[in-house]
Image (cartoon, rainbow, N blue to C red; front, top):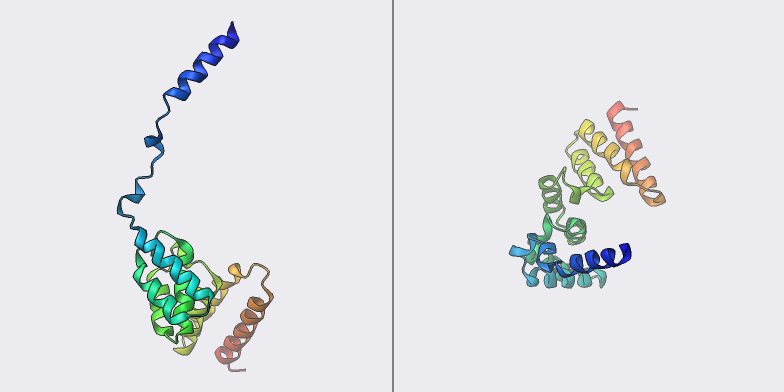
Length: 157
């Protein structure tokens, strides 16, 4: 008898499920063209066509705050096309957001501050970059080299 009631309740629950309740409200402004351009940019980036990737990434800027890896790939493309100043500006605009939490972003900011001879700021950015190394030996070597460079010029020794 208890089993029959349980089956009845389970059947009622299944019939009253409405798929519209699970629909995301964030997709009202979504345009499939943005996604298509982004994927085309990723493919062009992987194929080492940085200029093409940069054009696709620019046309899908809507994803900047929606998809965290977007900024990272966009910054890589900018740097590879020698548009470092623009990459620094993009990182500064998004500083503090989740999408700017990667080693290379802090490294670029540290090098920009180093170029401007602002050793304190450069050291701060470099220290922040240390948390994103995650066992990457090359990143650790870069981190230590720049740390020593800053120390030499800051202390004059």
